[in-house]
Amino acid sequence: MTESKKPKPGAVSQERHLFGTDGVRGKANVHPMTPEVALRLGKAITLVAQNGKRHPARILVGKDTRLSGYMLETALASGVCAMGGQVMLTGPIPTPAVANLTHSMRADAGVVISASHNAYEDNGIKLFGPDGYKLADSAELAIERLLDDPNLDRKVATGSRVGRAERIEEATGRYIVYAKNTFPKELALHDVRIVVDAANGAAYHAAPDVFHELGAHVYPLACSPNGKNINHKCGALYPEHVAKEVRRRGADVGIALDGDADRLIVVDERGQVVDGDTVMALCATRMLAQRRLKKHTLVATVMSNMGLELALAKAGGRLKRTAVGDRYVVEEMLRHGYNFGGEQSGHLVFSEHATTGDGIVAALQVLAIMVREGRALSELSQVMTRVPQVLKNVTLPKRRPLSDMPRLAKRSESVTRKLGKKGRVLIRWSGTEPKLRVMLEGPKLDELNTLADELIDCARRDAEAAG
Image (cartoon, rainbow, N blue to C red; front, side, top):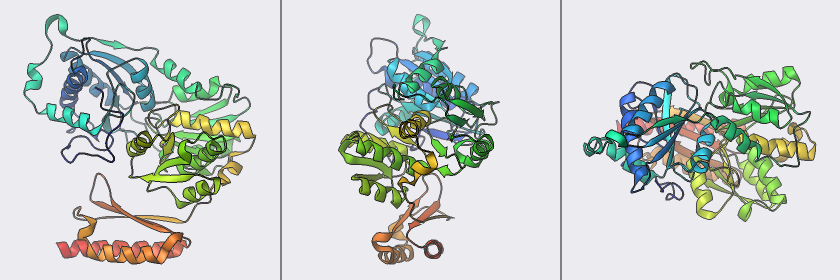
């Protein structure tokens, strides 16, 4: 399995039905997130990964803390073994740990069983290639096609060729060592007080240990998973939880991760949220000053605030935008040789250290700046001034090309002209449902709200006219 490093730009194949922009996802024990599908996925992944190799395909499987993870892990591992593959089970570890271990342990593929920031009732399966990058669309399509191929069952292993499964007991420890090595060796976190909210997810053990072993005084929060409390009113989606604890403890910083720990939201010592855009501005401007930001370019999505773009320009850099989704950020970085990118939501990719978003590694980069400069995060976060932004959604009967919505298109053009260089308009469909998202940026918040409502009204009228 080699097709993971350089997929074509934004190339989500129209032929794929099972895989979305970040693997397969849905309600656990309801199609497609059933043991039956997981079993066949295990078979198909192994067959594609084998690809003429002389050794049995080695598949590394990690998961988060969801109750349904046991069910899907067992089924997927059975599928791998049925095809003669070797399964390496890590237990609950962060998604970026699976990416890292897949490459460092020379596995032929990595599998993460997780629905990221979703509630515990959901689950998902996402794939990594042997280089630690998310699997290319073409490889996912090949796997998906095999699921309905009767020949898949005719290729199972028998006798001595049936595969084995083994548990990698030290998987978390390996990841902790790797993560700590991304922190500058000349620095330490002595006397730094950190609230760590692991969302009762995959990093419940690794995150507190990483910061503690670097010298920090750690206050763990939501680090007691029970299979059903992952992401429940905690973690990156509920930063107010960690903010309250930061204020109560008088901590220097709060770190909130999501269920699979590939996303980071930071809270300063005052309890104010510092989102992905501000973290990117902080880190990118320092990388520019140190001549470490390749081609003076940061990669972010169309959702990132204009303030990030202005902060970079002031520091001598530039912002390159992609479609929404961390995989598209990584694709752009690989295609042009950039080394830092991310999303407003907190997926941050430092390619010198990682192949995918890593909340713990990103937090360490922020902490390194705080320690090196001896300044509070509330002061450091002034690096960018946010441009007022409004995001509104409307659910319509069905998706249709924006070009087939004449009222919306006409009004969008006039709003774009009205805002000029001081703002922008972004209208896009949700990737999973017939929900239209309207985002506006500009100098006056009241005006933006009015204009967004007008655009949504145009979209509704277009939908009614289309019947």
